[in-house]
Image 1 (cartoon, one colour):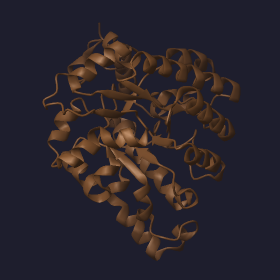
Image 2: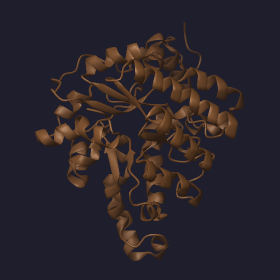
Image 3: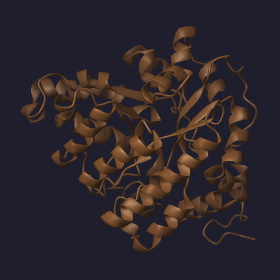
Image 4: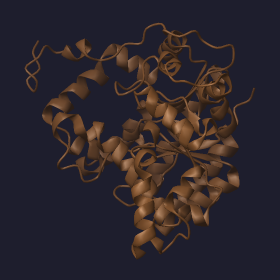
Length: 361
């Protein structure tokens, strides 16, 4: 059967999609933790679907027909469906990868920030209940972070408190914008304040880039737009004074922090010579990067080494983006290529995640 959009056989993606094989590296004796994984919750999707509009999903809105067809086939396959939804399928892959524990978070398409308050609350609770069910069944293999209804900041605080109280979650995932609204907006100060109070670690994972008209071809809607969205969001939060107002806010920025960790000097130069950057902060923007943490899903061992050199091994965490095809399939093998001391390696492979997410020993 031929796919009309691509002219290729119906499951042609299988020739390209990475598969999980036994790791090329020896698993260490200590616990390894993957801080960046996604678990889909079908019940939440069913609840949200009647309220969906295409403009709510920028990654799909700006994707080419070829990309949309590929993504449909990739997600619909029996293999991928199991990985996205089924704990047992994930456990088998984790064993192949040498991963002891995954941190579960929703796929970014399941933030549902556009739902009204009642529906948003119901969707988040369905997601949290499913996460809690899996964690309870496999307490040494999974932990989870919350999804918050960020379209309604006061409700987001309520859900954050509930996630901490009822489910024992110690973090939450969030997009790089809220249906186009930037995170430096003061209305989100209540969220950052509650996160600090509760000791919650925020994990920034963009849903897509809201102005992706020029990125439709070549899968740039993901290749460039995902790190670009994080770069823009974090830069705005820094320049908007979020960390000046909330210095203890802890945040992990996945995909290695986007482009910001590799080109922050330009923003510092602008701070030195331009008044526009000095409205909300009183020290160079790069100083605030010390409050951030970064995952290792960057595909180049030298980039991981740069993150360690620039921010310290205590600010870098193993992350794969499992089970998406833009993830790191053999994380231990990849990190074995990075020149790390044994102490640095232990922090990156699990120690930092244990500390930030308060994972029991």
